[in-house]
Image (cartoon, rainbow, N blue to C red):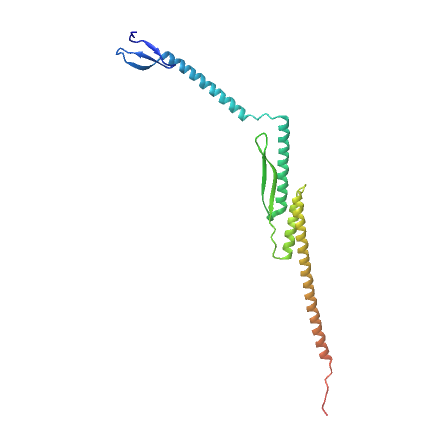
Length: 210
């Protein structure tokens, strides 16, 4: 079969093979096919852009939740507020003895994180004096029961604080008794010395001269 010059043979959507005057095979753009490819590519790009825009719109808009999911979000939000108020009360009453609050979080069906538990660290320095120990114990007890709904752990801490308070009161009472006893001993000794001096002054002297 004889092949004439400028004969076209389709080898794909974008290119054809043409025999030039030298009877050599070369790859050359097919303007018609190329235009069709560009139109198809532009259409695909447009569809992809529309799809991305739709996905972005969905991600930016609030996620639609079921009735149960909405109820759970409401419960988690209420719990979050309750937990943070509870720990804030501990911190406020604890003063300088209270540390930073730490929380345990749970992710809701809306993607947000909600605090479902928390704790505040309270330091319990021994105190250099019984009076300081008493002050720290009472601060600790106040901080433990500061929240409107103390937890079992809060009651446990308050109970320990009461024990510390009783020990401090006993030390204060003992210290006070020792001071009173010391003052009484000092007063008794001073009174005894005065009595002896008075008796010595009242003793008559004997004249042994003849």
